[in-house]
Length: 293
Image 1: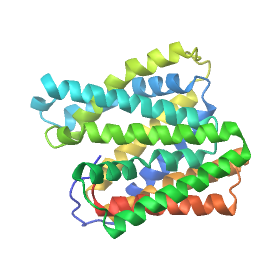
Image 2: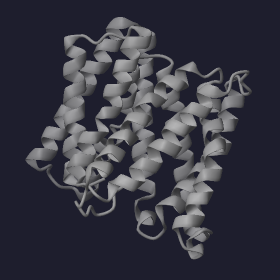
Image 3: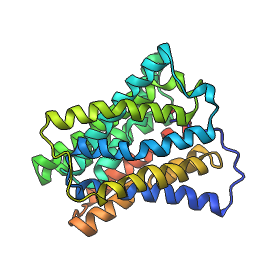
Image 4: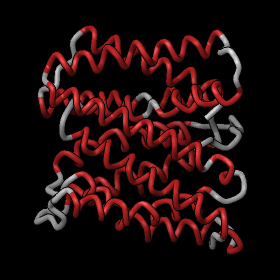
């Protein structure tokens, strides 16, 4: 989602909020892997728990005229919500199959895909910096996926889940691009979250996942770290920083996930894996700095 125009009047508290948001969201994959429920069911419960808090933010921050969506806007946001749900399913499935940092980085590649789509739609030749971003993303992603294939076919499939998550995220951003200028961000997030819940539940049932866990704390921790702390601090901090700073801070998420994967699950990274992560991270920073997403 495109950040509000930054005012750049930040202080140490704003910086701490920005870093805290990304650190909190970087821990999320650990709780996904620890959850007893399947990936789709985990996403469903996360959204169930987050919805009341999103409703409170909606009531607190946005005018009543924006709370109810109608007509074309309603259908567009519902469609975005379906992609939002699929994005979670692919990402959460990937977390259970491959290295945590890989999925976080590949899932965030939606920004690069959206830039490529914009170039195709505009039928223009990429600028030099855009070409660097695309090539860095392709080479970096290829190195990560190749490293996973060297480990196991299961890890390779997990990386592909991360790629699919990124594609769904790009579709989510694209389908809602015209609506973000007309409705508030909390209204959009509330309705997109609500619309994602049926598809998450249907997929969980269709895939035969465990729906009702005996231990709830990983899902509660995921909701708190991702929605309440992560999204809350991020919304507070975004308007104070440039897109480049936000893009750099975003890279703490895959870094934290990679460290957790290494410490908790022994997911070591080789030199080519690190190079792949650096190249893909550089592509994401370039895209964010161009402020086109």
